[in-house]
Amino acid sequence: MKHHLSTLRASCLTPLSLAICAISCGVTSGAHAAESAASPAVPVALSASLASHDIDTAVVKVQMVGDDVLATQTGKYAGAAMISGFVLNVISQWQLPNGVTALAQGTLGAVQNAAGQLVSTVSTLASVTGGSGGNQAGGTGANPNAQATGGQSISVNGVSQITQVAGDKNTGTNSALIDFNSNAVTLAGTANAPSATASNSTGSIKAGISFGSNGIRVALQTPAGLATQTIMPGNGQIAQLLQIAGNNQQVANALQLNLQTQQMSASMLRQLGVLQALQNSRR
Picture 1 (tube, helix red, strand yellow):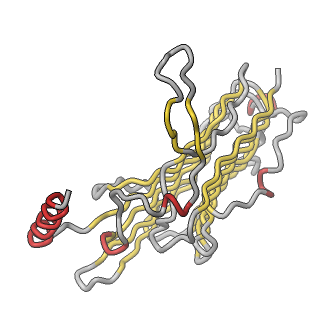
Picture 2: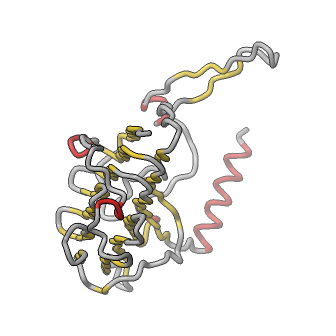
């Protein structure tokens, strides 16, 4: 039994800065193609109130809120002056049913030195391993009669996650996460290598990653489909795409941005304490 699942999640974001701080929150999308269909996307909204406290007649009212309202909301946030560095990890992995694994991963890091200047580092790794060749149509799980296309033509100013699946017993996941962590893990790879590529002996399975002036691109190509990640700081785009046309495929795109913050001095902590005390006294 064949299913065609296509999901898209997007958020309108401002252009990316050096630390790609335009990722406003962690987002995840995925599809499991077997005997179930994908659930429709739910728009972001604020729950206004319950129409009634009676369980039998309770109805949740939802009201869409615009940017003009959200802009006045208060809360905790990280200002640009607080960010002292970042570590960006990107990884794509494809496991075929015959045991072949295609992998592309990389890390971009930037920290401030004693002079206040940003010092960047980069590492990349690409590999195709395992299996018994990986070029037989049956062994790879590829289905020549299945198609998963169209996702490449979608352009979003912000974060887009697209999963297209045609086949059975497939698992595909796109995930993007932003975190504040001073002890971020750096993925294994060749230091100071802005790009890496790998393929099997026949060239039917390829893995590649590149860091360039125009952004970051990760791509896996197999007989059963395609997995890509594209980050373009110039126009504020982060795109994750999965296209699976086959059976028993295990695919994942993952992006993690770890923002490092400066330690607050004792005098700054005292100033904040006095400010909060004054604010509380006015209530």
